Amino acid sequence: ITPCFCDYHLHFFSNSLKELKSIAGILRSSGITTVFEGGHKDAAALKTKEQLHDLLNIKASGCAIYKKGSYGQYIGKGVKSVQEAKVLIDLLKGKGTDYVKIVNSGIFQPETGQITPGGFEAGELEEIVHHARNNDLKTACHANGDRAVREAVEAGVSDIIHGLHVSEDTLYMMADQGTSLIPTVHAFESLKAIAPGREAALYTNQAVDSQLNTISKAADLEVRVLPGSDSGPPFIRYGEAFIEELKLFRKAGLSTETIVQSAAGEFFTPGMKADFIVMEELETYKVFLDGICLKEKGLKLP
Image 1 (tube, rainbow, N blue to C red):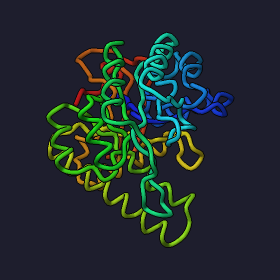
Image 2: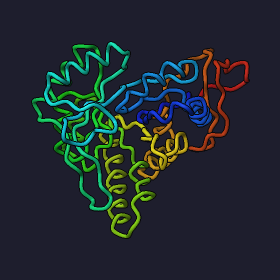
Image 3: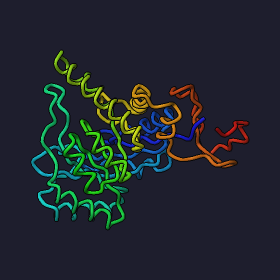
Image 4: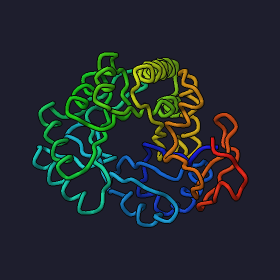
């Protein structure tokens, strides 16, 4: 048995608002009771957090912060300057955001195998992260390509989301600074569904292999590797994508124990009332919710 899971990266979009109870049910049936929401241009998750507070523990970014003219329009609000970013952070905090999401690169294009333009200058990024920290807000950073990842780590972000093509030297830096990695490898694999063709499949497979290698190296260096599904788009299904992410962690060489520990949103203590999952390897067998006492069920703590 294990504590319930945390999906460290997913999205709620405006069109999700009509299906929130269904989405919450799917996540809970997959053992997920805590989620970190990665942003939308309309800050849909702030409404979602309010409406689902009794079903899910939602850590909302509201909307991601990106540099105008580069990638990020669908998941966030664009800013022209550091000052605009600071104003947006203050506004988001006032609306109840739990952390700040920053976009520091573009996205992987399966048709070309390239990463699209995006991100801030290193000095700008450092100022934005510093302002978030002064507001008692941690920062998660969308970053692909080693330069974008390294500059985000140097700026002091808490988590790197995606991290495609990160170098071993940068992973060492992440280990030293306690920066977590959320590799979303299943999301890369899912791109095959929307990018048909032999070349796109080749580039996508290369990206997946790169991420699996990164997960293995990161774990060896004791970088905290966390599962995030990136679900929200129709081709990345809530709940199901998270379990597939765990299986890919196994493919990267991580042990079941390590994977479950990275996915668990809390820890058991003797005699506590707890939500928990009964598993067979990495398959969810049964989910027990609503604070059931382990002793009453006759189950032993691991």
